[in-house]
Image (cartoon, rainbow, N blue to C red; front, side, top):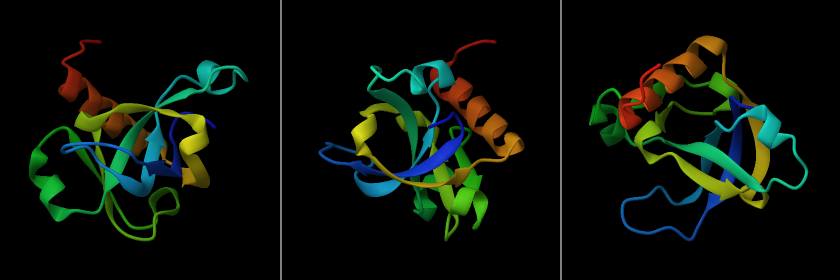
Length: 116
């Protein structure tokens, strides 16, 4: 597992307005953590196909059909960054191109107000 990869994940149980169910996620955690055998946590951003999410502003990134193996257009919901146990990642889809990963990183900055 590497930063920028897209995997199918089981996001249940969840609550409230959190993304739930089986859906693609983008791995965001540092590769040093991802490659450590005893490190079970993975930081991810869930994806959605909901057109309503596109109106959420600078914390949502559009992912065209075919990006990282996606069969339909999706959106990275960067204001819903979360941590999962790596056992919830069930199938590799592909890796984001560098320019889209940069857009995701910028959306995360907007969501968290972290300054570079």
